[in-house]
Structure formats: structure tokens, C-alpha cells
Length: 91
Image (tube, rainbow, N blue to C red; front, side, top):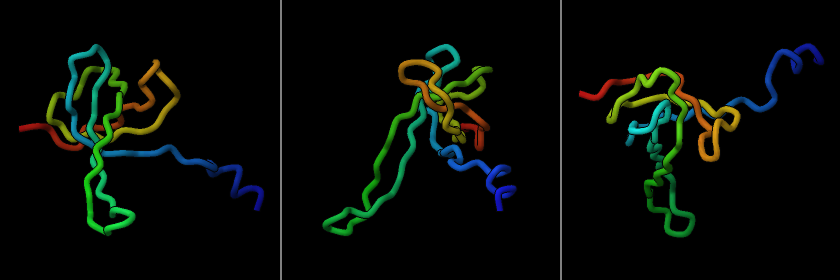
């Protein structure tokens, strides 16, 4: 049983998928991640949008692209995410 826990990470990194809102900074993207959650009291489904600052080493993604990001160590004051792949290019 000890062998199982040693090979597997205890806290897996969070992965999110969202749309690139801005790429005007060097090696940094702003990605809007939209989650659909039920309202605690009324039960209506509402959309919650979170803006994440993402590290993009090759300046690969453009505005409108759908991207997958993964949680990482702090890169700067506000950057805590890293670009893993561009899921879909903007048309």
C-alpha cells in the first residue's frame, strides 16, 4: 500500500479550460473560465466567470482561442497558471 501512494501525487494540479480574452502582454494571457453552478438558495443555474493570468512561453495563443491551462507555482504577483495546449483556434 505504501508503494501506491509514493507513485501517485496527493494533490493533482487543477486543470481549467477557457477562452483567451487578452494577449497584449509578453508571455502572458488573460483567460476567462466560465463555470455553470446552481444558486444555493434559488436553484437557478448561473454562470460564474473567472479571469486567470496564464504563462505562455512561446506567445502561441491568440485572442478567441480556447485553451487548456494547468495550475503551477507562482510566476509573478498574479500569474499562477501555465498554458498546456490550444484546444481550438479562433476563426
